[in-house]
Image (cartoon, rainbow, N blue to C red; front, side, top):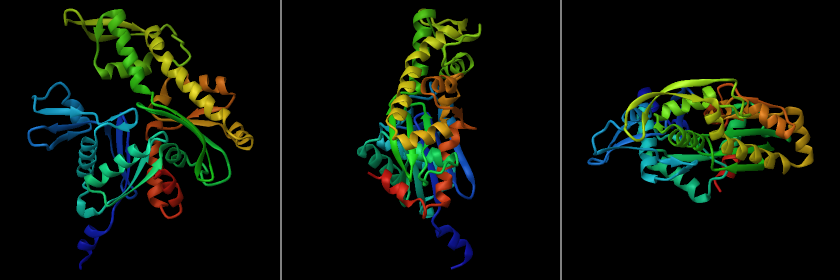
Length: 343
């Protein structure tokens, strides 16, 4: 057998982070190949995948009736198994990964995922063409991506704030010692902003505008700094395009429930931590990752309410996939981490 054929049949190791808002795919050799919205457009007549990621996002509200854009995950869990499998198959196709690649996949899974949700995610990857699938809990993958000593007898604290779920964990000796999680996140924040825009100003705006308002005006501490932003919107009653001035107070009021729930979650996690590991966390601090960690003043608010130094990771939305990519290179030494997540 020649070298070319050997390369075709060699197993390919793939890292997958399928999130509620964004999905990411990486290989050890080529790095991150896909980092786009968790959306898939399907032709309901033929059942074929038309587009995934940004391509599917561009098709929202612009497609004929037989093409439907799906978001197959909600609150960190698979809500449509078949569409999730089609999404993963679409990611494999975009990355040039075929069934002949016999891909061995490492996937992140929320720590609050039930055994049924874990099994559904694994089976979706297998249906998409993976030869074998190993799961690792997202907070551990994040800690690995941060370069924390997850397998040492040292307490490492991380808070993973995503679009559909939020998690906090203290990790030691390769496992989560204490953890807390909520099925609440950035999507709930976005919905709250959109609701207040409709109620107070009588307008609706595009999801991308809501996302921009969240980070440009929002503050976890409720600070307004006198900021406001003019955006293009459509009136609810007459459907007219208008410009409206959105102030920071509206965004901060929308943030209150999500922010308060996240702070309580982290307090619960740290409050349950054994004393010896608490000392480690006090000395080393807590690191925030995930897209929602970028909300202004969030780290300061959590530090004030917990008494622990809090920092935001560099490129916080890609920490998990970077951790999974490192796992590909150290699968033999990290096998216990995968086994613990299979439960």
